[in-house]
Length: 182
Image 1 (tube, rainbow, N blue to C red):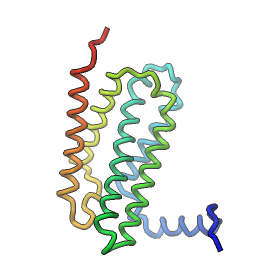
Image 2 (image 1 turned 180 degrees about the vertical axis):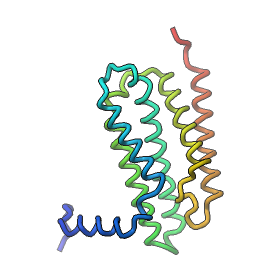
Image 3 (image 1 turned 135 degrees about the vertical axis):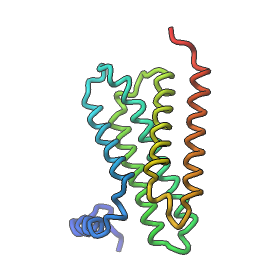
């Protein structure tokens, strides 16, 4: 017998019961923060496309979401590959969380899409720099708890900061290479 791709009411009730019974697996500072970013994207999407605030807010918000979604999935994949043999349930749960964060970030970016078109190169460079600064502060001050999964805090934090430093360097190089404003 083949399983249905459409969840039943019992499947959904079981999922809700599992999440409510194990909130520490799903609710963390990073989850709350990402939900805030997505809600910010929704709020921004309600502003008329021609509003000046859109030129300022939408690209950095999209970059924040992009860094979060990709970073979450990369870390979740690293955890899955590295520790799955010894703790399959925990690594699969973490991977599902990483996929969820990626999907949440993608939803936020999708909502912002109409406001992201026809932005200048400099706007995107600044958006990247804002995202790098924001995530650097997050990593240094509110380090996500899943960085410490299985005692790998120092290695993951260093890798995250190195990636953010590369993002900052890219912003600086692109800024210098960008044509001057007219």
